[in-house]
Length: 257
Image (cartoon, rainbow, N blue to C red; front, side):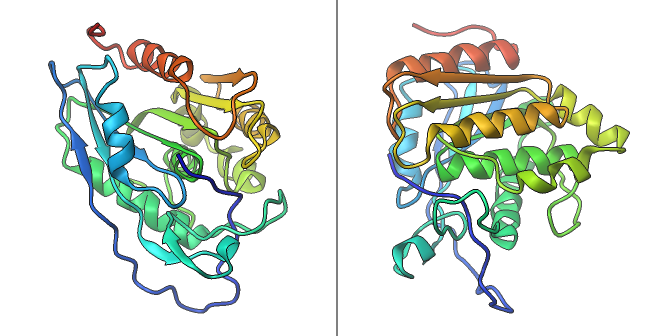
């Protein structure tokens, strides 16, 4: 639905301007409410398009919250503004991460989940840049802190990333290693990553390496699915995989037909 590349730092700016998030779209559960998932779109997209797709899925026990990212100048577009969760630059494994931007959106996701009832299981998922943000939220949950050191409040039960990558992968080991509580949270958090082998925007190798980085740092409940010929978009087969995985991992009552 949109495209993105690995994130880049704020480039010497000493202060980040206040960003205003766009409209949030909510898909109410058609059956008994058992789980709430915040779903994050890709670069240049909005919450509406994904809410329309998610509403068609046979998952009657899930409430979907689909926010819209702030409009901000994006380096990959030469500074031209676009809806984006954080700043992105060139497609490179060595590009610095926009930790300030990632923290801001991870906090926004946590705030959206904060109002949910205590017995509801919580999750986060997304596509492309939204997937990257979801995986960053997963590492914040495991570490118990945002990148800036503030406490991460949400208790996540599932994370889904389609056609994305893991930000801050090089510092993940230092956040988990030697911290028994963090290691326990990492070990118990179910994560599903899906990536097309034909992706010409976020190459397949980024998804593959992200999966390996998470697994090697103690995220043991990791599922990685690849799709031959799939580009930077989603297909029914992939969404069917997401439905089956969520039903299993969240212990949902069952799927509607």
